[in-house]
Amino acid sequence: MTARPFLNDHFPGYKTYIWIDADCWLQDWTTMEWLIDGAADGSLCIVPEMDRSYVHTYDHGAMNRWFNKNIQAFFGKETARQMWNFPLLNSGVFALLGNSPLWTKWRAALSEGLHKATDFYAEQFGLNKVVYGENFPRKILPATCNWLVNRGQPLYDAENGLFVEPNPPYRPLGIVHLSGDSKSKVHSLRALRSNRILQTHLRYDPKRYDLKVKG
Image (cartoon, rainbow, N blue to C red):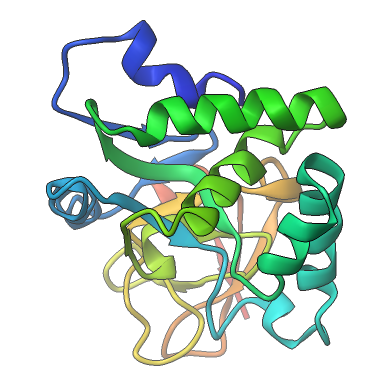
């Protein structure tokens, strides 16, 4: 994960850089267009871990306390105080211009954080520190553009062969992010517009319509 802040340095010469984690897959190309358009004016185009369907929206602040604990470990109490209750920006999907000053600032924050705590999330919290601390310009895309499966299990639209958000209006997911422990396990998904249950993994599979639906 420490590679992300160095993309424009190790692969120079591009106008816009789009990062998509290896445990993600693209279901709707429109998301790519939104990422490119969102970053065109120099903003960071990104998706926060925030949605009405995510389970941590209703966890009585447990997610915020986890966020605060990590920010404090990396950057101290004052930074944690300033960022209390801010939604975590997920660095698994984002777009940023190659000449953005955010790259250098992000690398510096990563180094600062790793000197205080060696942890898997150092670069993500470093990005949050810089973006929020300096009020860096940002364009926020909806959760469907980086849907965290371990935060909210989608529904399956069998008619169109698409995963969709679990609440109305049931918009198709643009990027399916197999976050956390959702990567390899079998999921029981309710089929849209029915009470049927689909037993399936959530990896990309163009033949998913062949999988057995029970119920």
